Length: 288
Length: 288
Image (cartoon, rainbow over all chains, first blue to last red; front, side, top):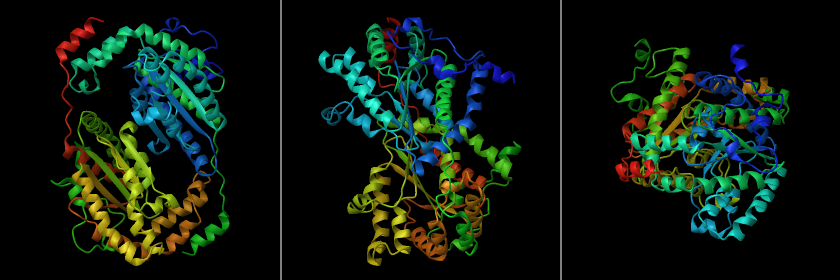
């Protein structure tokens, strides 16, 4: 009972609470250390995450089963955020609570020449989850209006057209049965500094550090401008954005996992009925 | 202390204990209810599995980190066994303890016409894990000397050549840095009957049942003959077979997971050293 009261999401749940309202976006208005929908502290948040595990895994199996028996629905979780914001952490600690057989995880790096030749959405389309699966993008097509814009990797008239192209693409996926959950992991530049410092101080974390991270960090205001544009121009009814305060890792993990759970619950997949004659099969089996 | 004593693997560990000796194989000599290397009961076995989680996850991250920094090693777990032997269960409960980002899971169904045209190893090669990854095959190229042989899907002179082709292929992978762990999940026909019955009795399991399962079940002796041939002819030093007694689900999950852990420990991946000037990066970061 006491545990349940820590979760304070309203009637519409956390999905409603964290959803970005339509219109201009100003990320400075979002506190990266806030914990909307959760009143407890770190230990309680970690426990709440573990508690989500069993239910989540059950819902996931229902969706998977539905997909095996002709259902065409799936979920796509898109994770975006500055370096160290915790895209990998969410996958490890949140998605890690589920059956890996039902997950399709894709980590997008800088596109190869072969990928570039095919247009920016080509490699994204390859990674769309199959029926019954939960797809997870660690970075995504949004990099094509983020780093591509900030670093002038393509001309302005090219990236400017991409917002509409992304909206069309996401609407197409939604119509085909994919529920898209786009999460921006919101950290402060101060928290990023602490996390990059930790990678430099801890030999077990050095492999995650790249000198380019500091170069990107220097462009923080430019990235925020690009995120504002992406969160405003691609915040459609078909595929809305969610801002996840992420300076507290435990809250970030709990929040994204809760959004996944609420999405699964809303889809409400049912165990597929037998598509064979059960009585007949029982007889056949008994005869062996 | 008491807990540790339940694990009774000898000096060579469970890998040595469950490894199939060279020479002719007779699966009737293996008790599917045995629990070699573990003296405890079900609850203790489940606890022992959970206990493996943290260490396994740490080793997995080291291997993953190594792969990101130029290391070329990986692990490939091949799961074979009759219907209901628990290939999916091992992935859910054993592999599920690890970070899904470091897993590449492939479930092989009947090959498509396009796959057949390319030769039986083509689709298998597509699924080989990348550097630092743990690949898992739910069924594999062994189906091409199992169902293909039992069901006469290809002529005898075709499947007969495949044993050598498989050995060559696996030796090639091993030379390229892939440690192959081939597990045969050994269940009794009596246990299979109970598990198929459960799928017919429980509406949440009906989606896993296929009337063809009973047809396959009727061919049990033929499948055992085909398994004997596969376990004998493809039991190489480069890629040996392991027999996992699997009538007890908890033992099966613990055993395969323990084999994975012992394999990771033997590879002993180390955290990659920084490939940049740490002092310089600290200064650059401090200046931001």
